[in-house]
Length: 638
Image 1 (cartoon, rainbow, N blue to C red):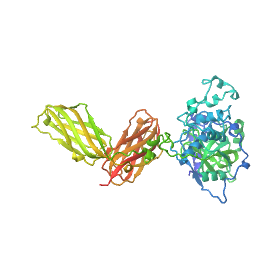
Image 2 (image 1 turned 90 degrees about the vertical axis):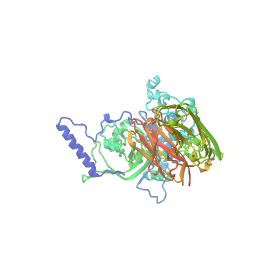
Image 3 (image 1 turned 180 degrees about the horizontal axis):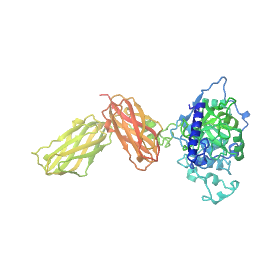
Image 4 (image 1 turned 30 degrees about the vertical axis):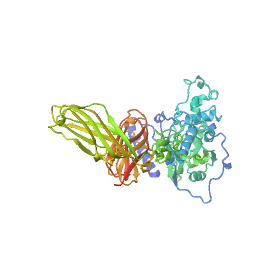
C-alpha cells in the first residue's frame, strides 16, 4: 500500500514553490499546484453529485442497527475485494451516483457468484426506481436502499438491452424538461421510458438488502464475513473531495491518488451552503495509510511542534466518475479512491445485500448465457464435457471432398491446389483422384501433402511421357493413422519449358476411424484481462495442458470483447516455443472476436505442457478484453 511520508510531502511542496519562483522571474506563474483549477477537470467526467435529500431518505438511526462484530474479532491491516469488481464506469453529467454504486455492487455480487463479465443497465434501474417502485419522481437522485429494493422486486436488464445515456434530457428532448425541477415530468429524470420489448426482456435480481452500521469495525466485519462490498451514501464536502467546484483550495495530487480526507471546519461550513451528496462502493481498507491533513487554504495542518498532522485509516472505494482524472494514480487503478474512515463513520449511511441465489454456471441446455461470458449453452467452453453437448459418432465414417474448378498450370511454375477436410479422426483408408490436361504431361511432378506435413510423390517428371491427358486414381497407404482434418495440398510442378495445362478436377475420399467424444479433452481458462490499446507488447495468457502423447487433433477457441477487432493479432504458442498466427488484424471495424478453428500446424507435437495465447492490439482508439480461451484436442501415445 502507498503511504505518504512527511518528508516526501515537504519535498513535493518545496519543489513546487521553487518552480513557481522561477516562473515569476520570467513574468508569469500558474496557480499554486495545491490548488486544482477548474479548467483542468475533464468535461466528459464532470464529477456530478447527487440530491442530498434523496440520498438520505428513510435512513435509520445508527443506534438501531445490529452489531456485525463477533467476540475478539480481529481484522487484517489491509483488505480488498478488487479482483471481484467489474470495470469502473462514468455517470457522465447526470446526478445518478447512487444508481452507479448500486449497479457496481450488483455486478460485484454476480462476479462473486461465478459470472464472468456481468454488465447491468443503470439506465433501466433509474427508470425502475421511479416508475415501478414509485420513489423520487421529481429528482435524478435516489439511494442505495431504494435501488436495491427495485432490483429485488422487479429486477434489471443488461446494459446491452438498454444502454446508459450519459447526458440528462433537456428541452431539446422534451420541452417540459425546461420547467422548474419540481414541475418536470418523471421522464426528464429517466431520459424517457423503456420500450415494451425492453420491459419484457430477461431481468436479473438480488436478495433483500439491509442497512449496516457505518462504524469502521462493523463495516470491516461485514466485508470480511461476506466477502462483499458496501454501498455508502454521504454528505459531500467539496474540498475533501478536491472537487472542481470547491470554493476552497484543492490538491490535484490528492485527486490523482483518490484521497478523500475528513473535512476541516471551513470545508464543512462552505459545503453545507450548497449541500449535495455522493454515493460510492466500499471494497476494502488500509489501516496503515497516512495522508497529511490540510486547512482551508490547502496548507498542511501542523501540531504544536510544527510537524504535519496526518490522517490514518482509509476505506478503499470504487467511484463512478470514470478513469480520466480521479484516482488515476491509485494503486488499484484509475477510478478507485481512499475515503477517510472517520468521514464515513460521521457522515455516511451504508447498505448492502447478498449474492444472487441462483447458480451462475452455464447450464448448457436452456438457451441463456448463465455465466455472462457472451457464450450460450454448448458454445461455452465450460459445457464441453456436458452430455447434451457431446455427439458420439460412429466408430468409422467415410468422407469425400472434391473440386471441379479448373486450375491453370503455368509453364515452369509450381501450382498448389487445396482441399479442406472437416472430419476429425485417424485415416483408415484414403484414395486420391485427379484429372489433368497438359500438352506434355511428362513435364509434371505431382505430390500430395497432408495437414501434418507428410508429403509423398505421386507422379515424377519423365521426358519420355507425352500423353495429353493424365488421369490418376490410387489408394494411398502412406497416410494411414494420420489425422484427416485440415488442409490437404496437391502440389503440381511443371519442371520444363514450352508446355502448359489445366488441373480439371481432383478429390479425396476415405474412411476415418473417429475417436469417441470422451477421448476428446478440453482445457480452458477465463482470464478476463484487459488488452493494452495500441501496445506492441500486448498480453500473454498461459494454459496448462495435462494430456499424454502427441496431438492427433487440435482446435483453439477464443472469446474477446473488443470495439474494433481489426486491431488484433493473435498467436498460439506451443510449449516448445514454436508459434502460429491465428488472426492478423482481420475483421476491420467489426466488434468482438469469437474464434473456433482447427490448428493443424501442431499435429504430431507433444500435447502436454504450458501453452500460451498472445494477444496484441496494434491500433489506437479502441480497447478490449480477453474473456476466455481454450484448446480442444485429441492425443494418443504411440
